[in-house]
Image (cartoon, one colour):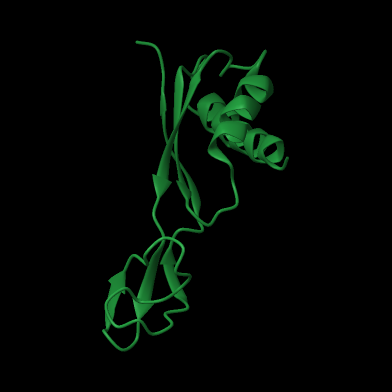
Amino acid sequence: MHEVTVALSLLEGVETFARAQGIERVTRVNVRIGALSGIVRDALLFSWDVASAETLAAGSELSVEEIALTVYCERCESERAPVPGSGLLCPACGLPAPRIVSGREMHLVSLEVPE
């Protein structure tokens, strides 16, 4: 379950930023995770609760926004979202579109803190 490692890495970034800004407590962490990132959302949420215990993010909510897979089709010269289960095929022309534009990333987007 590599989500524990991901949660610990996120937490490290959160703590580094928060301390640099003089923030003593974080109540919510917002992240975006791509459909092909290999991260299981529920496992990450569970891991976050365990990893953040006894830190400045203890009891915080981890909000996960999922980023859909988007590929670039050379033939159509446009970005498209493949039909789920079809692999990396352009949904318009049906040709392979192996250039992934989005869907593999993970971004720490923002933190929320008490007023």
